[in-house]
Image 1 (cartoon, rainbow, N blue to C red):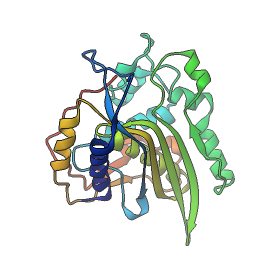
Image 2: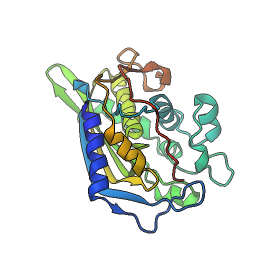
Image 3: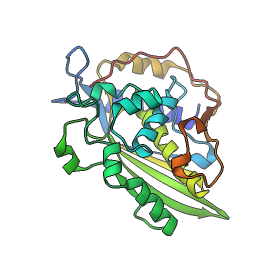
Image 4: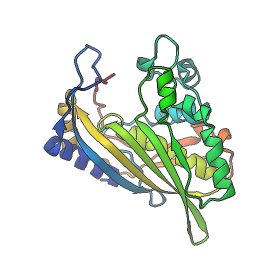
Length: 279
């Protein structure tokens, strides 16, 4: 069992045994029922990517290819356009969050990245002084939220730091998330931002270092308890999956493509479980 599998099972047990039920829940299932959840607050994990610790479970298949493509949509294209996400990347799961028939998710995610030129600023700061302590991506923009409706960002803040170990420079990343669906989105979000971390590290010819992951509200929806128990009963794969970025060191951030990523030695337990998402 990998570190990710061990943490996954531990979090499921903690939510089921120690969690509390939500009140006045916002989301709904597609049939109109209110989507309540059982949750804990203040979940923190750490992975050392340099030691092959990646935050992806083998207890069920994780659609990592579409997850990484979403990162390109947000941070390379810097877009909120659903047609672009659908047509360029073949990813359609954001369609349920379209705002007022605009073909967008509102002034969220990629729109905020573009508005503040966030990636260009981060790359410039790291180039000028890799040891600066101001490499912060924040997608929490109240002004943008007032302009349109739309789902407020869940994974809303990322921070980067550089460490020297011997002759090597390592890029560490911290992802902060206000809310996370433990069974569906946890490893999707984590691996997305590991991919972003790897892209920035590759831009400078550095090595991916540690990945820190903090979730304020970690939950399991009330229509997923059966699936949670099934996951606890599964035996994890003995393989150790690795995410590989197959481009040379120094490749410009904007020249990296989603197909340059490869997930190797990943043999998740099947069959896949069905989850009715809360919207």
